[in-house]
Image (cartoon, rainbow, N blue to C red; front, side, top):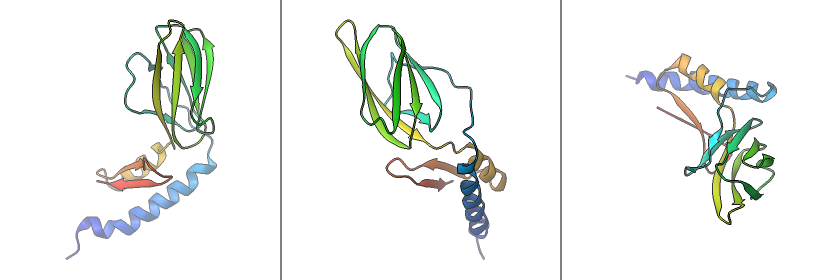
Length: 143
């Protein structure tokens, strides 16, 4: 007797492929997202491709450098704030030097907006999870 999950696998795969094929043709979705807190940099900050985020600091910014500007762009918009744009999927770093002589490094992962695909898969089976692969342009499905 086949497990219910195995019987659903072809339907789930077809739905995932159909949803994924439809997503690139749609305009970027805008989600309400707050500013990242630069005082406590986490291991990897996630941005959605084609979306802007603000990065605020308690100290004055002197200069910045982005490892791969094809993946992430950063623009100084005030003495204590950067505007970031996720340009392409991938990982890169941002280094910020401050007026007091210190610096901080932040890692970023720019990922696709998977919210439409996640909702479609959840309607098939609430236990299905989807995420971007951390090391390549691929999706990972799991339960």
